[in-house]
Image 1 (cartoon, rainbow, N blue to C red):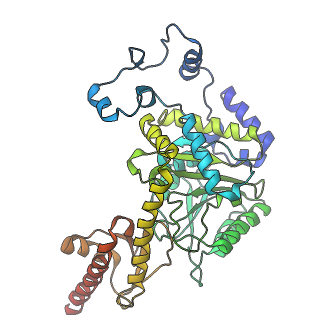
Image 2: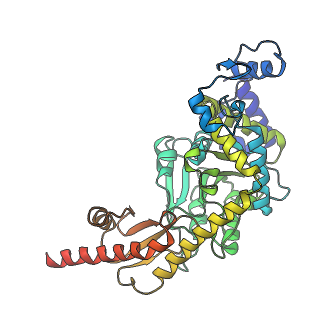
Image 3: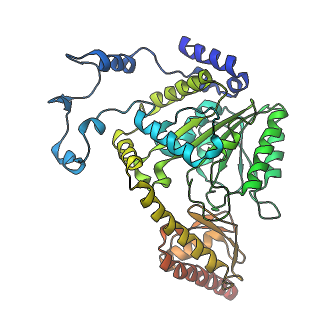
Length: 436
């Protein structure tokens, strides 16, 4: 094993042996090189005032070489802020700005010890990093039965972990904390579990309330007290889009110092929060018991980044930083929030009208981009194809009876027509079936 990896492991084992035990084999082996091109280039950037012949970029007239046809479209920005490589952990100013925003929006973090956000190539990359660091073959990854299908690729296909599902909703149509607790305690023989909490949930658009949040935290703490090391990933992709009386902050704050056997990791980003899907700017933030522990986790995370993408795109990091620092940012974001809330409320009012009750019910939703219909009479895939082929309407079929509808991408004035077409399609399929 590389001496740097061994040193990081010794730090983690000293600071919190449970977190060290959570690491995958790759997580134990990975490190960020202290010597090599990046470190020598960083040293040269600080000291080489005459000539700096270290890093693999081209310089012209004292600034990064660039094409005029590109710079003309980006003339607001200095070449040094878009063409140079960003550091593996991300643009320092952006990391600080995102941390400030996170603390303001999540007061429950308070004075708990958390690391500086590390920039990722959006949230999927952040989840992939966590999988690399903490998921080994056979490890259990606990997620609700209503979930984003990419979790299977990220944890099960790539890393060989085992997906363990529990029902998202209980009989009261609230978050099923008892099911989470049961799934966790079933891992006692393994002594380790990875939990992914995705709120607002994709595909249902559900976020728990305060009491449910406490129940979730209690379930995780119970597992830790039973001797299970728990890695908890809060997938906060749709953070901030809370439209009703749910939690309005991430569970990361509540979990950050809940137990030494719990490692809380916040995975979020500008992707959905700031409506910049194609920018691919996300963040990974660790909670911990000491600065040394957080530093070791950051070094290992940087090692994964260096070994895969080297560093994230610099231009999009600069664009997001510019937005966060703009005096108009909060007002413009609030305007978009109101539009999204209007679409969610209109969707709910249409579904509650009674007009469609013979065709479907729906899973509770109060946030995010999506909602899920519970079809009563037709197959979801059959309906999806009929909508697409006969009416030019795109939806997502999930299992036999669930149809995901993204109200986020439909203008509020078009939502009624959308649901009318879905209902019409159900009736058309029923008629064909009855005639056979």
